[in-house]
Amino acid sequence: IIPVSASLVAASSAACTAAQMDTIGKCYADYNKAYGINDQPPLGPDYFEDFHRKRSDMMNKDSIAAKPAIAQYGAALTECLKPVADCIVDSTYEQTPLSCNKDNGDGHRFNLDRVQTAYECTEPGYGYQMRHFYCIEHFKSLDSTTSTDPNRMKLTQCGKDYNAAIDPTKNPSDDDLCKAYQAYTACYRDVFAGYCGSDEAGEFYCMLVSQEYRLWAPTCAFDCKKH
Image (cartoon, rainbow, N blue to C red; front, top):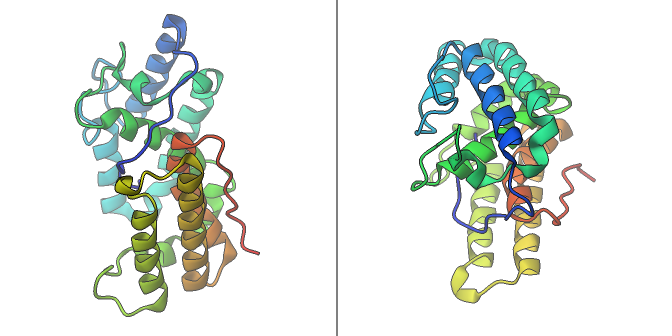
């Protein structure tokens, strides 16, 4: 999962009702049970424990062979949350019965994990990822500061351009931020498509990265298909 970044966080127009929170709690309780976790509340206070640790352990142990089970669990969570997804924002995860840590950004981590899981564990994202898994993982292993691969160097430069564009000292407008998000996700698209020789790989990683920006800027449009 892409690490949390420091920037804007979208606000909800309406908080989840008590009934909706109960549904969300049940969905995550079932999700944790799929990973063999039966703790209460449905989410522990630390994002990097519970299902996240179990999922990471599975990937470290079994690599691509772990993906079908992870996708099954993630698709079930996504389906369970569909009726209440419109009310979920970062702060939802700080409320009872979820009760994640309020002080370290875990609400955003859980929310980002939710939307990225929905893409990675359903089609077409799951199929794209499985077909290009080894190429994507190999690219991610390249050192961002020392690699001489042209695609890795391009992404590093895109990251520098992105950080300059969102520099808070420049007081960027919402439109400026949207354009920066669009440019950065398009760079991911082009880099992974070029490195893996497949538009699917580019679309997959562009879509994965864009999930965070969609939380911050719901009206910002992203084009992850290679032209």
